[in-house]
Image 1 (spheres, one colour):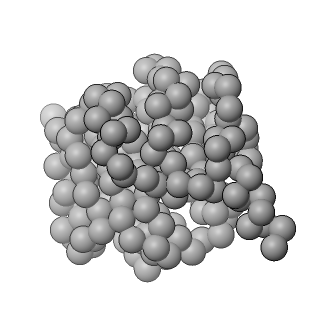
Image 2: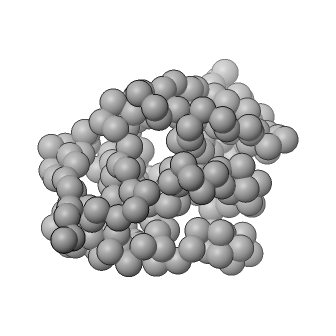
Length: 195
């Protein structure tokens, strides 16, 4: 039996709208409280930002970013049922700024680092059993705009690679999460905050 679930968008233009997602192995949408805290950290208004949602799953994080004004959201997810659900949610919300790439994240990153794409916000929430957060972070610097933030959800064992630092962190139940920055973007961001 193919079961499915629903989760609600917590803020922005689509606040209260439901997203449907499949009952796929390892797919566990980020809890409401964690999503709300993340976007409080980011200031709620993501107008004009370009976002990347890796291991998109239900797409909840990426849709939350789009709901708050992100101009483009690229979701990467290899599970065909999850990608199909994301596409249906895009159609329901008329979310033309959201695109889903059905690919393995590491394979997508290998190609993206030479594509010239860059992002203001990256969302990294893989199934915990994969334990690939550190590998993903090592691939990301070439894709980050100055001052970019990277959200990472993990099981509490995350070790940031060299050059990364935590900007904000918290936990909700078993979910540990943080906003991290790479050193290449920290000078610009500090200058912006002190002006």
